[in-house]
Amino acid sequence: MLQFSLREMAKFLSVFSVRNLLVLSLALNVSLVLRVLVSHDSQNGSFNGFFIEKQNGPQEEAHASKGARLSSSVSSSSSSPLTTAQGDQDRVINLDHGDPTMYENYWQKKGDETTIVIPGWQFMSYFSDPRSLCWFLEPEFAKQVVRLHKVVGNAVTENRHIVVGTGSTQIFQAALYALSPRTEAEPISVVSAAPYYSSYPLITDCLKSGLYKWAGDARSFSKNGPYIELVTSPNNPDGFVRHSVVNRSEGILIHDLAYYWPQYTPISSPANYDLMLFTVSKSTGHAGMRIGWALVKDEDVAKRMTKYIELNTIGVSKDSQLRAATILKVISNSCERSDGEGDSFFEFSYHLMAKRWKQLREAVHQSGLFSVPDFPPQFCNFLNRVFEPQPAFAWVKCEGEIEDCESFLRGKKILTRGGKHFGVSPKYVRISMLDRDKNYDTFVERMSMIQS
Ligand SMILES: Cc1ncc(COP(=O)(O)O)c(C=O)c1O
Image (cartoon, rainbow, N blue to C red; front, side, top):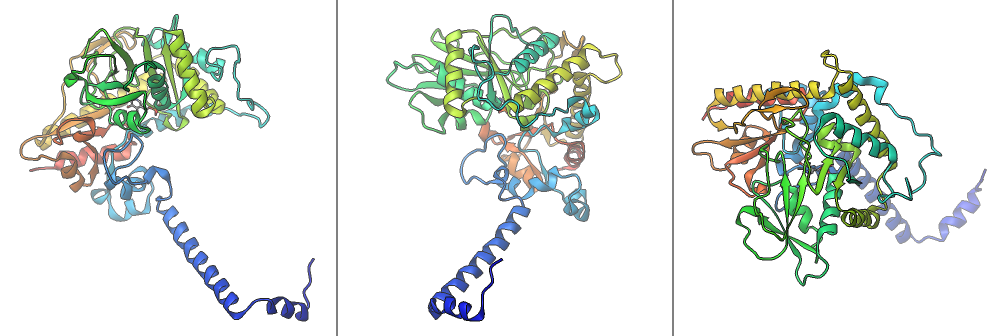
């Protein structure tokens, strides 16, 4: 242990002038004040990237909008002291982004069936299967992807390459990279029919790529030459089944099938497109795992997508892939042994979505100020019944005089995403149907009471 005598201490201090000591004390005080501010702000959530506010333009899927910044922690926490103190009437309900927390109840009931333990020495290498086209794809994850598609019957997996990504968001970028021609002088146009998923334009243009460029609504796209059309089916935000709209010979299609699962829409046949995107975020509710996958027909396209992910993140978390594999396996098991007792994941989520859509339609009817789309019923081969689509988002229109539905609902402390983010009129808003029960119930109750 170090021991200072008083004489040594005096000698040490004599090195500093009074000015030095003043500066030192000022620096210590400033750092103390900063510490207090930082810890205060992080308690309020504003040091969490999830709440970072953007000043201009639409927000990405997981980024809260301006109004949402203040309130996300309130609406997403079921035990917030603020909630209890203010009561449900004053609580801000944030349904701006599609965070799939509604699924927590199911997975909680599954208990240890989905628990995985990964010892510190395992899965350390970058590589999963060096001989495979997608060398960072975990074989067990690939196996469970194929199995689940077979069980549900929602996509053809034969003669397809699987490319795994950090969410379907990364896979989407890999697809743009892989499909863009290298020989053109100009970037290829990327289009999607409005209302389109609000993140497409943001992701497409975020790096101002020389390979591809957002070109807006596919319905008004008239430029000659090659283009990429994004077909989201069922569509985010409006839930309708979609097909390509441009239909020209030089078109390249990406089918985003994030919502082609039986809790949202009848499964009429296995999707059989050249490039199909899926994600655990909306199928199982595990958005935080950040796992998506593509089923790709063309080997060269799959190779280029793999290359992009290699350049972008040198692969995809093995821990997440293994966790996702377990979740998919438990779902397939639950479907195969389903005895009508409600154990099947898709039975559970189908019934929950049906209940929520019924509640919403009643609330909309009672209020008289809003409308929601009607969907034609169809037979679902997987659930073996006829039903109307019950999308993950409600595409709500403010009827009558209200021109800005997002602002109108913000005034009622309901945070939504307005039509302009999706390339259409501000009379529309998108509302997440996937929040926790408590928030959803408060939301429909409040909607039903809104009068002009
Ligand atoms: C149509 C569509 N594609 C992709 C995504 C993003 O999925 P991920 O969380 O896997 O990046 C979303 C998320 O809302 C979506 O709605």
